[in-house]
Image 1 (cartoon, helix red, strand yellow):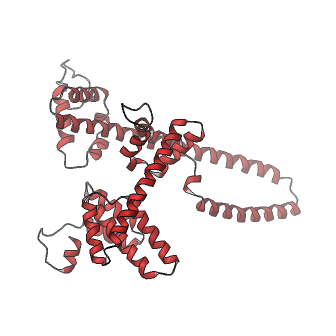
Image 2 (cartoon, helix red, strand yellow; image 1 turned 180 degrees about the horizontal axis):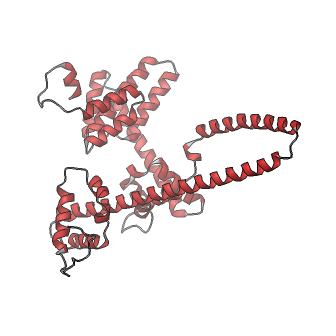
Image 3 (cartoon, one colour; image 1 turned 45 degrees about the vertical axis):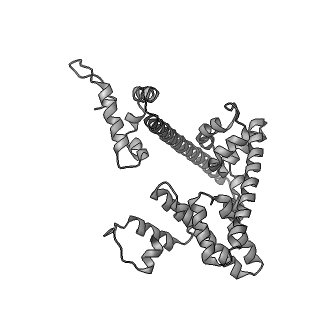
Length: 345
């Protein structure tokens, strides 16, 4: 069925309900990530009539689990559509900036050519010297830009657009009984550095709601850091590194290893290393690695687990090894009981 097709030449209208059900089944029962199938069928997935049909199906569903699953699919389609639109906007902006830069370069070259026609030999030499100095200055400027802080980089329109849905969720009006504090608590994991920049920009422009949200975020961070500190104290109090790692496994299964805990371990490792306590620094590094690994094991999918491992690995050869291991077909389900395989399990 072609969901975008017009009626056939004979004037018969296809049963669109059946077509929509078939397409829904393709998305739901596919072995691929649903986002991949949505992206590969964008014209069908974003068809207005199909989305209206899906929304009505969600509202009319008597099964709570089915309704929740279909709503997740609906939101996923909206998310993929928005991401592709944002990507297109970014590409168009990039092309426009490149075209403007090229036009400016050509205009400057033409102006320089006109001026060059009346230049003497001495003028040419002075110009060459000035160009050489400017080249050195440009190289220094480029280096400075590389060192520029992430927070100093400009927010683009597409970045702001990408956080529009999250802003609607965390800014007033709130449902009954909810506050900025509860919004921060419920969506804490989505408050990344880029989103904090968006909120800071809005607050600096006089938006009190964004300012209140940032204040609530600071309070939540302090609470989580205090909890992480107490948790780390209890782990270190065990004394033996093996027992400490055992405690980390238990904490990960209970969902108590979060970013503040990992950042605290990293900060303690850095502080110990700066103080010359290399043994303590190595212990903190070991605990942080184990905590991160155990946290990854609780991830919802192998793909997310692999992405997290790759992001944490600085060494290129180690990243390559992780990728090879992830994409190498396993020859058998039962592996030899070697120490190496036990460590991988």
